Amino acid sequence: MARTGELDLHLDLRGGGGVGRALENALRDAVRSGRLAPGTRLPGTRSLAGDLGLARGTVVQAFTQLVAEGWLVGVAGSATVVGALPAAVDHAPDHPPPPSPPTPPIDLRPGRPDLTAFPRAAWAGAVRRVLGGSTAALDYAAPGGLPRLRAAVAEHVARTRGVRADPDAVVVTAGFTQALALLARTAHALGISRAAVEDPGFALHRRVLGAAGQVVVPLAVDARGADPAGFPAGPAIALLTPAHQHPWGVVLAPARRTAVVEWARRHDGFVVEDDYDGEFRYDRQPVGAMQPLDPDRVVFAGSASKTLAPGVRIGWLVVPRWLRAPLREEMTTSGAAVPALDQLAMADLLSRGEYDRHVRRMRLVYRARRRELGARLAAVAAPPPAGVAAGLHALLPLGSVEQERRALAAAERAGVLVHGLHSGGYWHTPAPQRPGALVVGYGTPAAHGWRRALDALTEVLAPPR
Image (cartoon, rainbow, N blue to C red; front, side, top):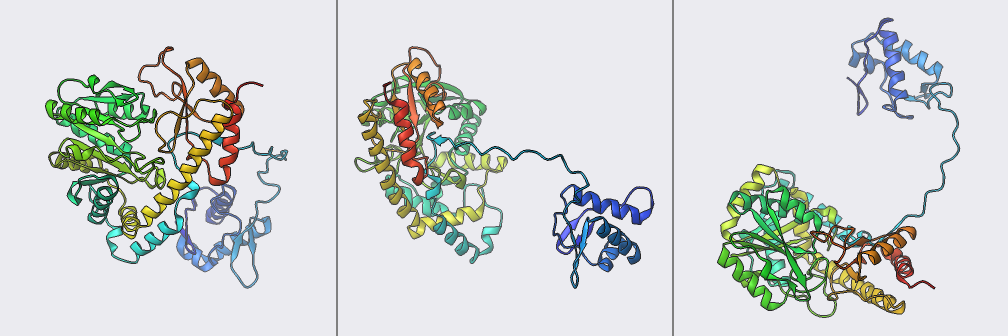
């Protein structure tokens, strides 16, 4: 291993013809393969000879030969640098210029916010402040989360979602999917092996539960949310989206919330309240969390995926006391810890109010987009969005599977990416008699691309002329 300035470089000097020839071949190969890029500054011949254990004259002779061939370039008054690949060596025949890149698709898939709106300056400032403080940001992060973030989350969810939380109840995870996997495995270890999940619902969550050994039981969803009549007898998990059912967009009715909690008490089960976009309600104040009805039977789950960006990979659970120790043990044995630097940056955003300011700003943006979407749909006599005015997606009923297929085919021809209720795997058991719909992520496009996306979607849904 030779050190070229600050660059470690492996040079294999094996081969016939002596060490001088071996050094020439090794340097040629490093340039030819791209490991030494054009313009890379090489060390002086004395330093390289010392690193490789060779006579300096051997290195000088190898450099002289490679300069003559064009592999290296001697710069007067400076070091030797790597030259451009000689024209006669390993050149592929000329090719025609690549075609112009295709027009990028219009992304209206649900599940993401406008990533261009991420508060870069606020996040960068938080990271700078964290790095300017304690070295705790560089150490291993304890499973369950750092005290500073757990305290900030407890205050935030209590203030904004009405959750009954204290820092000891908060568990920090790498987003909701990891949180669900940890809860499902923990429940299985405690003897709970069934999970009731909304139908329709997010297909990935069913896969996560199944991978943890849970038998998934579908819960029918109507205008009042998930129907508790479908709950299994005996201990089970119930995964619900009470504030804004995904994807149908309805709110779990108060009487059903009470029935859900009573079921959990009676059958020694627990509820996972997935509050995936509860901050975004546009026609009134956001619906409060279900967790206060019984904090001993409801696990409240939130994340920064819809408010900031999925790539932040920070989520949180507010966990009943009896579940905390086994859950943290599962996190320890699976290595499920969120990087400390990211946790402290998130805590900084929360404690300084930057997170709240960003959410309020984006709430106005998404409210305007949903209003525009509804107006444009009405203008072409397309079905209005189902459910309440909330979240980052809208479900557009289409009546039948065949209508959904035709709409998706038209969207594909127009370069519009959108999900279908059937094609996206939302139904537990697809069947022709089940209604079709498009699931449109109006939060996904960048601000500068929103009008183009809206025009394209309207064209797809407009009746034939």
